[in-house]
Image (cartoon, rainbow, N blue to C red; front, side, top):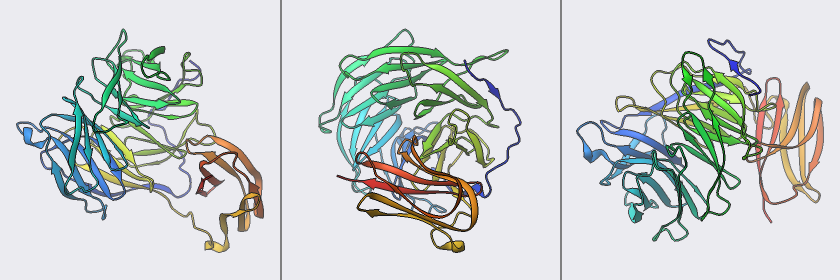
Length: 411
């Protein structure tokens, strides 16, 4: 273990202006929310039954056009307790006590069941291309072929000496799963023959024992794992040799999930952490001190944060992460933007006064690909050419500003 950081009752200096604001909430009215996915202005909530109410199972469709006042628009009842949900294009993939359901959600007012398959009770899901990876809670990992959504089929079933898989993340043909006080790395480059690469035990706290691993997400080369009172960072650069890096205990309430968006890590609270310039030592930049447990987090492309409760009595809450004071091009007499040129991308910047910072390019996982300029920034022009098509981010990072520009490179 390289670092073990105890941060209890820590006082931090937030980046100037960064903040999380409360926007609104949605009360599902005696329905239990297990997982949520947001696409555009629609929220898709998987439901498990409230006490004495089996009719509250299935998917709840919520209109988020006005996020301060979300409205239920439909409820698709399913005859089973529902768990993890993933949305790809116009299809919803839903884990449940009766296996996997595939649902056409093109029209939220008239969703249609496409198919289902019941190899086992499936909890959390990740859909990558034409494969669905699903944990079971007590029976390992299922890999399901969804190339034909109308006829999904099990490719393989993997179980190990500790099959209690719950949360999962997938990166570069490796599945990472939480299994109580362990995380496992499983090679799925051959989906028909998954291979366990390594098992790593969570940090041990004297008097409390081994921590429990929950939700996780990847910002390569690190895996960030929720441990209820904070998060744990694991080096996954060699999946067959997982290495414990850092434990940060800094959550005033129970948080069971983490989400990474661009170069930001979100934890329960909710709180936001900056992963640049050193992802092994994130810096907290904003915190909203709300009440209750945090079972599920979802962050959309506009940096709205959706926090799911752990009990029926709590509503689904919506927050917004904002870079207060960050101005768009042309404001304050300054500008930061890009345009296509014959040499690739021409990056233009100018400020009314000299600032110290850097301009750099990352890939969509947040990994820094190239630092274009570092030091005193005033006014200038830079050039950058992508080596291959993809999604990139152009980032300006100064003492009191952080501006992102998304760049899509096509063939």
